Image 1 (tube, rainbow, N blue to C red):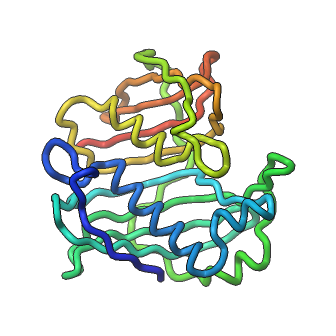
Image 2 (image 1 turned 30 degrees about the vertical axis):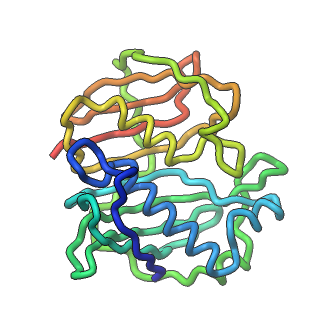
Length: 235
């Protein structure tokens, strides 16, 4: 298990003074990247080898979002590797062990030269010993895309949205999606599936709707092919 300590800053709170929904995901992603740095397999070093870990899905359960100034810890560990895929848990808690949020995520190993997923290198597997999965309800990484969605906005991909892989970073998708939630929507659970990497010059067509008690925010291309599908459940 890899752990890091953090504190809720003013730049990351919402109007209620709580760590924002997308900022919870950011804190988890940051912990994962710090883990990679500290075991000598950073995203920058992987890029030099034309490799990358790309996220395929998130499933985050929010128990309580910490408030402004509150100290919290994020823990992460991989629990399974299979073929091109790696599965990783996250746990956010207070120093007193109160659980704030927990998550499952699925990633795939990517060859940037071929533009295709590839089998995980042996050195990557050795760097990340697996541990038992967290006790939570596990869902499919695939999210069925609702058919009756309304087009509400178009967003041009700008340089600020890109990461070192020249794709829109997964955290940016989440941050943008949260902007389309109804006012005062208290998120209890969040799922996301990343289907197509958007790059500079692409336009995200934002489509929203409700189905079976869930609120969906989907980013597609002009023809309706999804880049990103997110599913929110209200508390």
